[in-house]
Image (cartoon, rainbow, N blue to C red):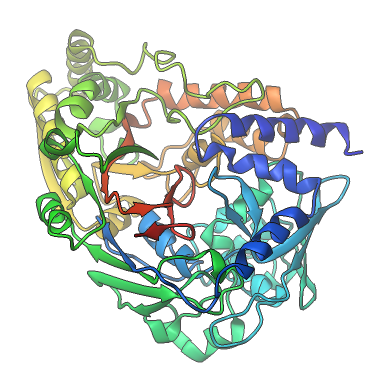
Length: 572
């Protein structure tokens, strides 16, 4: 029998499986705690015997990317595009199934201690790197130590500390303990033991997130500073092998890995990515047959919405505007911030500009990805913060005039930075028009730039307003609310609130963390603080309008962690 508090957390995790295709990732947690998944592995093994694992009768799938890959180093990557490509050729301990549940990958089975503090992963004997070496427990130890090493400075180190609660992770990140003291041990070549500070109900679902992927230490050290910058400096243990890539490349190619332990399920001969940032060019490439799948937006949706190949797919990303509260005097004024958020007509942005099914959003946590102990969507009520976040021209002007009076000015000029991609360019232009039309004396200057530069500037505080997005890394509101903790790398406005920090800490390691219902209520309280102080101006929850050739099937879409998975895809 599990202890009562662990049972409560598992019940919460199971409830998360009820909403959204990505939300069900957490249901795999409770299932895995009670089984070694021998049935799953047996079924996969049976499937493999029905096909030659070393051959593929399929074709390459031609896929459009709207942004370039930023990094293929699993412990350094931070963006969805990079995560997708890394996951094409790398397996972690767990993987997503079609419903987003966490199921075995490199891990053949896992044992969880009665108190929920120790996970013992038993690795597959037939999992190998593309250089012929076996995947071992030491590969995970090395990778996870890299993730928390202050010299590596991984932006996702908090996934092991704050989120994963691995023993000593935070102390190592802070520089007070050596990385060798991380609570992860290679018991032998095929046994990995992980120690946690507190039970984490969704821990197994974290294992398919790329930060937790393994790295072969000898290979890494042989690459020196060039690791993951070319096909020659990457190793595969997954469904595909990278064979054409260079940093900032506009094309990326992967070929089916004939030595993949589960090669029998992989029908595609390979993946051919094309980075196309202009939506019209992408549509023309699809229509000419150069692409099998592409994004469409704006007026294009009207053109293709009746095409059998058209699909609207929830992407999970929350798009929002972040104000630099620390550095910009005008934005330190809460009335100015209220004025801006109430001058934004989110319905017009989604209906008239994007036209892709994206939903106006008025909460700091988006809809349809995280469900609570009672099964309800955390953000189903989009009017719960209407007193401080809504579209209301009269209220916006009232707050604006009050803020100008407090500042002793009659005019304000603010610069907003945004990505140089099609959708954010269009959204930024509409935001500028809405704000300048509604708020007298306001001038919004736009600066577009590559995403990597925009993110860097926001992290360094070199911005005034920033149009940005965040996608959920795991199916829990904390994936969003954790961003606003003091000194978090993604807390772009450098906002700080002691009460907020205390609530989040208690929901992570305190008594509240052990009570699913109390934790859910406390997370609502935390979100209330963020919204009351207008720390962000939420805009919309992204839905991707896509054209997917009717000859293609089996692409799996998830709003959490990995947006697209191709292991079961087929092109006829």
